[in-house]
Every structure is written in C-alpha cells, then in structure tokens.
Length: 84
Image (cartoon, rainbow, N blue to C red; front, side, top):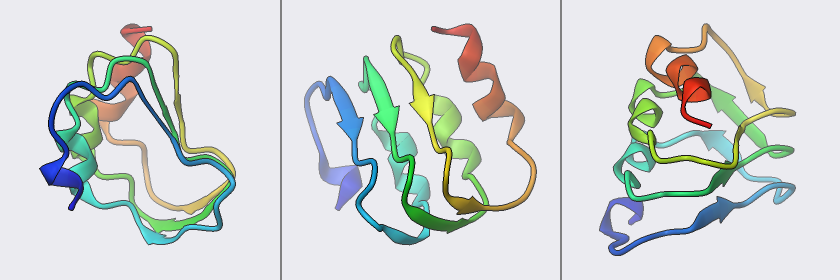
C-alpha cells in the first residue's frame, strides 16, 4: 500500500507506535518525501532496506533509532546524511 502513495509527502513521522516486523523496501518509493522520515522508538526488526537510500530529498532528518534493527547500514542509506 505504501507504494500507492502519490503526490508530495512532507514528512513521515510514525515514531513511538509499537510497530513491529521489518521495514518494507517499498518505503524507498516515497522519493518525493521532502522533509523528515521518523520511525524511531518502535519495535522494527531485520535489516534496513537499501531502497531507503532513494529518499535523497530529505532536509530535516532520518531517524530509525530505538528499534531492534540489525546488520550494517547500507551505503545507500548512509549517503543520506550528506543531503541534510
């Protein structure tokens, strides 16, 4: 369903909601996300999808802290810090 979001999304702030399971790679389809991506303080597990590296328009933060994620940070995602 995430991939069906159209138009400009100013921010995705879904912190502290007790979301569980892994992050869907479809979140990377939100390439028009222009401000903030915050899924911190949930119960998300698994790897961080490299597709999140497509969110190059972020200007005000990318936060996945305080989850149960594992593995290395994909290079595509680590490059996001140079954009804001």
